[in-house]
Amino acid sequence: MKVAEAVGRALVASGIDHVFGVVGSGNFHLTNAMVAAGARFVAARHEGGAATMADAYARTSGTLAALSVHQGPGLTNALTGITEAAKSRTPLLVLAAEATAQRSNFRVEQAVLAHSVGAVTARVTTAHDAVDQAAAALRRARHERRTVLLNLPLEVQALDVPAGVPLDAVPPAGPEAVEPSRKAVEDLVRALERARRPVFVAGRGARTPAARDALIALAERHGALLATSAVARGLFRASPWSLDVSGGFASPLATELIRGADLVVGWGCALNMWTMRHGTLIGPDAAVVQVDDDPEALGAHREVDLGVVGDVARTAWRALAAVTDGREGYRTSGVAAALAERARWRDVPYEDEGTRERIDPRTLSIALDEILPAERVVGVDSGNFMGYPSAYLSVPDENGFCFTQAFQSIGLGLATTIGAALARPDRLPVAALGDGGALMSAVELDTVRRLGLPMVVVVYNDEAYGAEVHHFGPDGFPLDTVTFPETDIAAVARGYGFEAVTVRTPADLKAVADWVAGPRSAPLLVDAKVTREHGAWWLEEAFRGH
Image 1 (cartoon, rainbow, N blue to C red):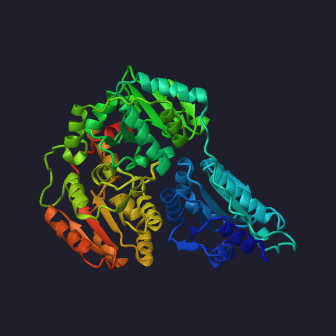
Image 2: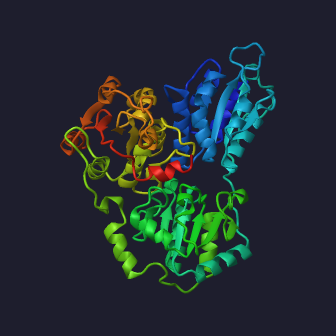
């Protein structure tokens, strides 16, 4: 058996059931071996899309995914998606063929490229050790929650595995949960007991059922309100004490209540400039606690009064066991009434700015929220528009929202939604894109159609890179470089086999309702011509970080 086949079989035996990519000569045999062993191969039209699909699939499914790419340009094409995954600590195994011959036109320093974007690397070096080396890379990706590039030199792939070398890999166990120290738990409990208005902010490290249940129980005992970072949106959807997202997308009421807290506890949450609005969401007298299983994460973005090293679920359960009496805390009747009346952005009154030619993005988003089935998985691209779907489109839980924004790259939203859709085939996938991101990634419309995904792609189309328009326009700078003539994106989608509708007024959305009620035999693209007179409410705050 050749090394390529042995490695592919071993990776599938170790638990990889989905591999995404674009196949070339260098990864042809490896990918085919994985398919023959039972993995599903998802062929993208571009390696950048494949990388983000794999990232989103891993996030939404909670399992390790693989990306398979050709040597050299296959890897460089995928780098933006790999960077997003690495920055997000997504457990992802990148399988890259590698040209090592000095004069090969495919040769680049692949390990250097990976390190430069925050991924870690491994290499298959001999036929004897190939399976063990691949298994070690997989274990590191899973146990350390890292994006790992496994380089597979062409000449090693073609070698025969020596007789007697074990070819069967044992599926590795998942990472062990980090147990918090007794003193850290005691300090946390004292902070909670002192607080009169505690707020919990849960992040990526709390996106598990065990962590959610533990935090809800602990919050109830101490009267804490519940919020999330954007990547964990939906985690507390069922709680009447949920503030939804903390940060730039927070509703006015959520902003007011978080700023009024005397204790903010970040659970598996970086408490970075986005989630805390550059620190302005933390009151001057509020204590800040951060709980994370990675010691290096504590205090990385802001000073904290207490850092607790521990798994979120275990830490919360330990803290809960140390307290017997419940308290009202922040859960007063007045707060309950306010949350019932105006917790959601759609509850905030606004003046509709739509015209006969352009629809207000708030009106569009509220209408879509009512039309589309509640059981959905929403993927969001980057840009001025992104706050509208993130704030106005409800999601059923934390697995209903996939937010690939650690690198803030435009163009990842469509591939994000494809990956999330494959992880949750029971839900309607909804991709929310700007026109810039939609046209950057239009090639993956073919992938949506080819996979038969009943997806709704919503394009918030202002014929511009809106963030730059509203950032530089008020100062009088010329905007010719960031504005474009009108493009019929609906016609582009039809060319890929989509049904499509152009929306300028709320009445045009009837076609969306008809699609939802119909057989959904083809995916749907909504080319929404949105108003563009001013930037989204969160944009000024966002640009403070640039």
